[in-house]
Length: 406
Ligand SMILES: Cc1cc2nc3c(=O)[nH]c(=O)nc-3n(C[C@H](O)[C@H](O)[C@H](O)COP(=O)(O)OP(=O)(O)OC[C@H]3O[C@@H](n4cnc5c(N)ncnc54)[C@H](O)[C@@H]3O)c2cc1C
Image 1 (spheres, rainbow, N blue to C red):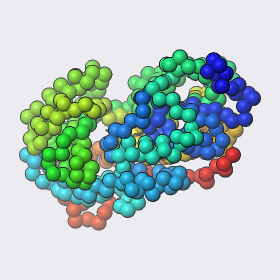
Image 2 (cartoon, rainbow, N blue to C red; image 1 turned 120 degrees about the vertical axis):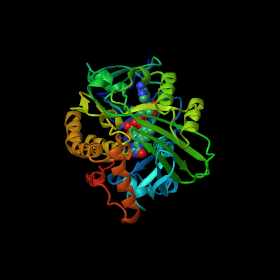
Image 3 (cartoon, helix red, strand yellow; image 1 turned 60 degrees about the vertical axis):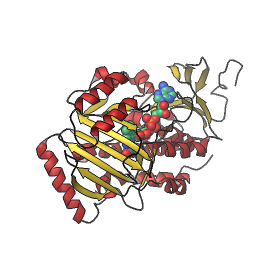
């Protein structure tokens, strides 16, 4: 590196340099595969340290093969949460049905995984921390592709040049915005808002989910082990509440207004939300883009193709997308050809998984009394039926062989 903080000249260095923005799931997974194929990888993360948010996420189908090839499957199996049951309740809190959690999620018992998002991020980070440069507490300010690389100015004032930059910075990706324009162009709002936060487990719940529904509203308590309890309040809202999106007080007020007068444990949950210091509020939506790259800058994971929590496939798409992008960059020296191959080979898989919201993934949150009754009938049927078959979309991509190490 030169005294100005610039990386060595991209034309003379043997290793090509890639900057990845975001150190959650897709960022460290991409970093792993790229450094393995000979890239010098830097990851910049705006948070001061790895974020340990604990809500549970799923790893299914093709993504299981990705983590197996990374050598982290045994650690993830150790971290597996294994929720046993999901109990559905009606407006006054009486039981509608209690079914195996796998049957509800369309997961394959004994094969698919459910882990805390923070555990997955930590395991991925542990896999690459010695081989990859991490810049925490920083972010990209400007990207300039006018030269033979990408000139990057960081918020901290650092200036560096990289061969390639990849945005792995999530649903609200600033890299996407700087390259392709405002999020509204690519965001497909799915008609729901949600608030998620942790609260004391005073209910004696253990390794299970309780879900209360009325038309257009759901309240879930998700017990991970005996103590950790994630509360989830979701509601139908025809238009996104733009005013609340950047205002935590307005979010709390909106949720409290929507759930006023609700039964079961909902009033206690709303009170806990008021005190929660880890409230996460957002709309349920997808990112749909005609292209995932422009010049030397590409996107991966939620930044490019967030499928929404309604599909439960965000982390799996992030892992598979990272593998496929790294593979394309390892097998095509030319980045234009590599980005094209990545899109060609992953787009259908993404489309199938995003389409899960149109094929019933949202039926857990019906918006009318009739739809809720139909869902309840379906759930009562699950109690007596054999486990649901896995959803074909989860395994709809066959991974190419791992690109040779350089
Ligand atoms: C409430 C909730 C429930 C979910 N449930 C599930 C589920 O059941 N199953 C499932 O598979 N998925 C689920 N998901 C989705 C899953 O969390 C995401 O799809 C997955 O984490 C995507 O990974 P990612 O690395 O692409 O993006 P993210 O996990 O969003 O990470 C983006 C990273 O970029 C960082 N960043 C942002 N801006 C900048 C910047 N300017 N500079 C540097 N870094 C930046 C962020 O701090 C973060 O670390 C859920 C998501 C939410 C919110």
